[in-house]
Length: 355
View 1 (cartoon, rainbow, N blue to C red):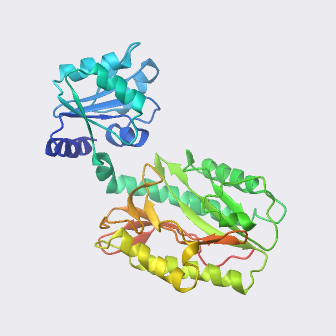
View 2 (cartoon, one colour; view 1 turned 30 degrees about the vertical axis):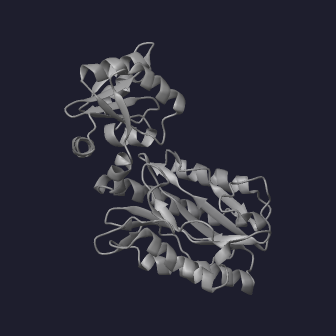
View 3 (cartoon, rainbow, N blue to C red; view 1 turned 90 degrees about the horizontal axis):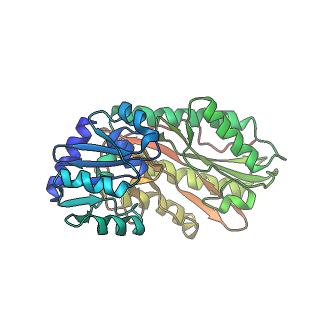
């Protein structure tokens, strides 16, 4: 954590901030190593504090190496005020995207001589670039998900419900080392496959339907994310055309995911292919997003993605076509950007699988 703290301190100094106050789950873990659910990080120019309650005392002392662990009493705000005062903090950077208005107002009214200022994405910038250990964890999470996909193909059959597939995926992932799922698994069949985020339901899976599986799992805190659409039965020509259009868009975009290209430029490659096939209005979301401690983080691959892609970023490539009252297809890989180009972390097959 020493290197991460050093980089954070450089960013704070460059933004004229005396300290950072961090308590969102992902940022807290990234900067302190703490895996529990309650804790507050204060980083100054020369000190790092971890404030928590009695329940997490021992855990914090074990995990937060290089931090002074402080156990607050009945009033968290009083403890924060004392710690900031002792460190002579005048400008405090806060996570403006996650702090509630109530907490902000309480903090502001209690800290008389401290100016609260936004961190403006400083932590997002730090987390953009994955180190070797982070990449290893993401790759392991992706491998578990790949194995789960292989397993689930023999489980799927007409007559079972979407929820049964979701439960089996979760059971398999956890049995093979995952701590939890990255998000509520999307298991969407038939007309429900036209819902980009069609979380599993009680619907029965029938013959002659698309079935979209979008899921991921968490390993050592890091997420994976993949999507495959299969067909239950035999696909007709229209269904094959839709599938192959998405596959072409996904593969052509994948070829250009490399250092130096803008997120919006990669998005355009996939979007142009889908539009040329006559389905432009049926692809209404961005092509991809970053993945790490959170399943959705920077950078963004979308029409608004102005960030230049760089080595050691991990992103998704997930175009789709969604036709209301008919069905849909999405194909998603998890991709590590390297100095030479990219390495696909998702290994599951992408050809049309007919079950």
